[in-house]
Length: 42
Image (cartoon, rainbow, N blue to C red; front, top):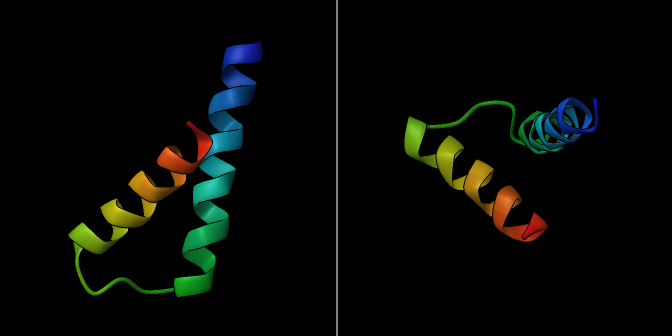
């Protein structure tokens, strides 16, 4: 159960960041935001 909650927490963090931007010009920019989020966690 803990593993699932951690994954859901990470997904929620990415959703919070993507709601601010709303639309990404390309796939690379979306990946950049996702990677930045995970680097911040580590």
